[in-house]
Image (cartoon, rainbow, N blue to C red; front, side):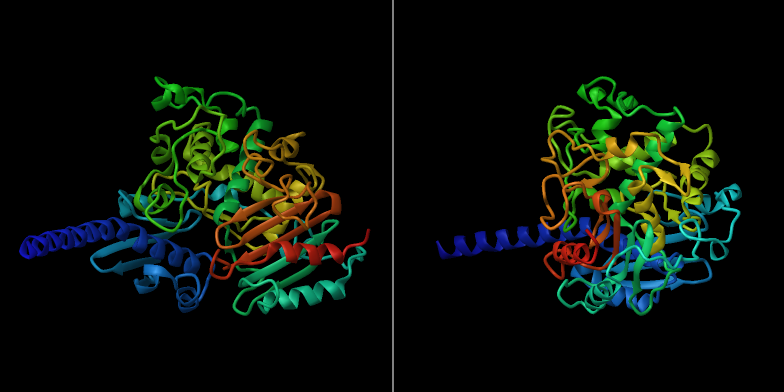
Length: 451
């Protein structure tokens, strides 16, 4: 009997080891891919010190054991862990791309169109299009804001690790601060704030008559099943009904999409329908990448597609140096990968604060901001169309009309129309580890404003 039990235990133990190896093997593309992609962008887009990046953003879980090799000549990063290996390359205009089922030579042969230049020097023109900040008194308590800024950047009271912080009141910068190693020229990763930029691109295309949010998505692979009922609006409001797992901590749909596939939209499109379209709210980065692919399909050429964000959005809103990265298939990663400066993010918030008008020009169609901030039916007032809302009072200290762009690890653009306020925070503030107390931060900022 003891021998049988011993043998059974041995078999079970061996099975556990085999299962563990198989599971670990499935994680390796995510582990090494995350490190290669993140570091490549940080070094070649943000001009960060790689050791700082490894010590802060890449210092967790298995990621901290990855070995990264940077090739400055070819602008690439190769990352290894155990028997796993991933490589990411930087291409001018496209940002960094993780090589998955893609030919490196073929990708490098694709050149970003040169017709997307802004044609102006921001350092010689006034805010908001340029960087000459007006000396204007908005009535905000600047001494109080300076106190808040000092506490935030020191990690006191609000926790988290802020890399940059900016406040606009009545469209004017009244607070701006950077952690050592960062500056006004540093481009920061948006993570999921990119979804709201995807919202803007859809809005501009609606204005151009190229898209209708209430029409069906018309995706070929959905034609013969109930997915054919999914509209662009369902995708933007995260109510498509497609099966999805947005867990960032393990081998999930979102991590497999970003680090183990070449066509992010196709990966999401292949998901089955779990609930009827429009009947259930569930946050999905896959849905926003499907939206990004639908945008791409409206253009007659990729050159026209790639120049659209710079010429129709970035250049017109003082963000000429923003980089919207693509997946290996060439589609903008509308869920996650935008790089822009702190001031760029503030300008984007200002665009929505001013109902889609920037520097006197209407960028978004009339009514678009209202549409974007109308709650998705099943979101309990917490989500609109690729924007988070506060109608459900997720942030008790802030007014209900606040809406925001939220990104992984604490990236935020808060827009509060009733107080004529935009607040931007970028940095590294992971949940359950060193999460920032945004509610207290907003409460203290609001106290510095008149009225």
